[in-house]
Length: 249
Image 1 (cartoon, rainbow, N blue to C red):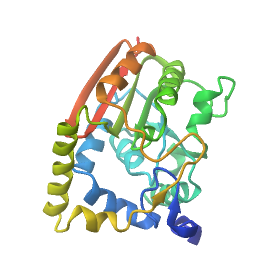
Image 2 (cartoon, rainbow, N blue to C red; image 1 turned 90 degrees about the vertical axis):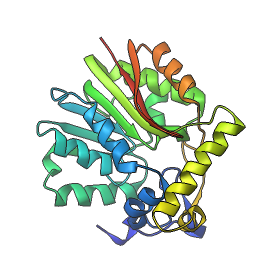
Image 3 (cartoon, rainbow, N blue to C red; image 1 turned 60 degrees about the horizontal axis):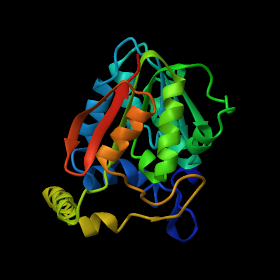
């Protein structure tokens, strides 16, 4: 892993999704910042069928979800895209260290470009499954819908898509409940949420992504249904975090 993989951009500005100024802080920091992070990713990985051999991952980050899926499914091959070169470098080093390099391809790409350009073909053939974690909530709602439509088009019959993401609260009262849960989680880890956030960078717009553009769970399930997912479901939810997605026939 080269030094650029963990160095921070100028003035602590980071791409949406990088979260922390230093990439090396991500794996520990995100577990302090988000309640039940590992449980969430375990549920998402468990939603993929064992015969879903070819998997597209949108926004691989440091490769935590990637590793869980590769560990769960020995025949799975993952094509992961991310626009952050330092996150890709970090993920690649972890995946190579785990011995999974032959089953993983990392591509530096803004998946919003893939969604917005129907002629873009750089990701190869159809996929059995699509996955994403902590990435799609950086798109405006119009782009979320385009992405869901593009994912649907990329899936083979019997395929599925699952997303793990934070949610927009449906009201001010619900927002307060979600916030209290985050505060309680941080305290259970031995620090305040403010202390955890002290190492969070300043997120700036990049490509099609922006600082948080959250949508409600109901709105995103409707987007999935209108995109052609015949079955939509929410296999996991914890306050303002959820795993949701659907299947195609």
